[in-house]
Length: 102
Image (cartoon, rainbow, N blue to C red; front, side):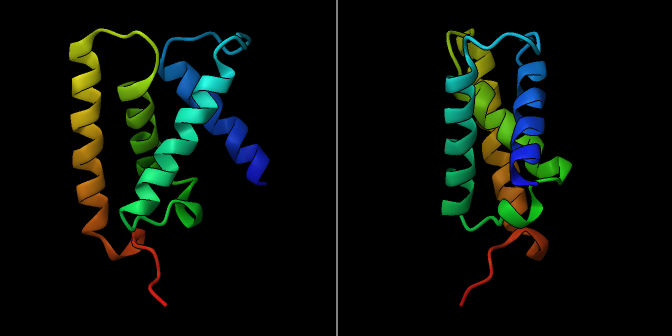
């Protein structure tokens, strides 16, 4: 199941970056940024693992990748990073998306 979600998320990110699904040259970089986005969100107390199929979580991960991936125009990266930060702030205000504190 986790691998299926991972492949689905990878395909979604590729689509959002305008990369054809069969292209594999940037797969390692995309996977690295997806994992970094997930780790960053969890660092902020957002429960990504339990909500990975949620569109809001996936969209936030996409914004993280777009804000850090490759050689994209600086203004696009800035917008994606700003959007990512706003989404993380909004997610952290909802109990549904917060990590359980033990």
